[in-house]
Image (tube, rainbow, N blue to C red; front, side, top):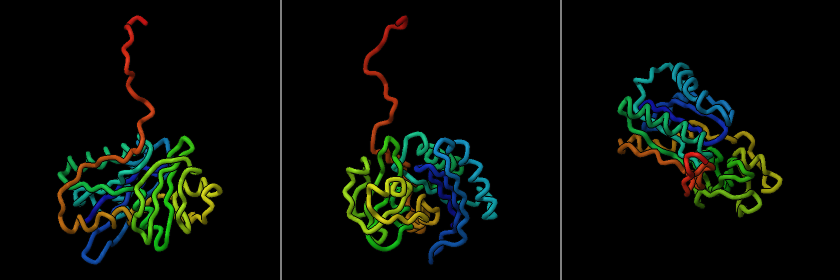
Length: 218
């Protein structure tokens, strides 16, 4: 089955297409652009370009995969809303994947800290052993993160490498499309029911409704 994967939980907008087979993945095409303020403008053109590179129309896609975060509110919801809209319009199943899990899988064997930039001088992070998550995703200042790993991946790990004190794999800064698809592959093969794409924000949005009402003339 051909699947489309999207992720906008980091400063990168990522779109990938691959065929999920009984033996794994085949023919991954991927586009990624790094711009934390342009997810809304970049994602749709990247989907079109990725489909063109893969040589398949959108109507041949059989499932949609979306990175659930954690990530900043505005960027993250671009990918989730886009994935949900395509799934609804084409009546396709949608599946969610933790963005940190995709980075953890791409990091490979060993004990690895995955950290992405959460802004406000904080990071979203989790620890992985041989690609499997062993701590829950969380958000904190880098100095407050309990480091229990041999190395680190993610643009947050690179940005705060001096604080973490770990070697950083600079080639794994953003979630690869192949890792996103691989994490949902078993659900796709089994024909699992479509999932609600619930974002992992981990903290409240910056803008919140006021608890008090003001007079219209004030």
